[in-house]
Length: 60
Image (cartoon, one colour):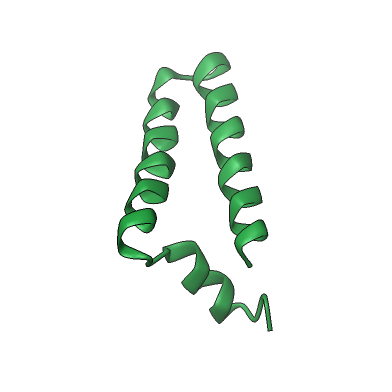
């Protein structure tokens, strides 16, 4: 599960950086959002993406 979450986070960051460069700088806010969620999950041990993936049946 952790490898899937890392892959999703990395993909979100790279895509939002590309969109911020070529489409609109407002996409950098999404990059910041992903980074803040990663930081938050390090302190609280709660991850929204983990809950979403669990409800979708991933990792069982």
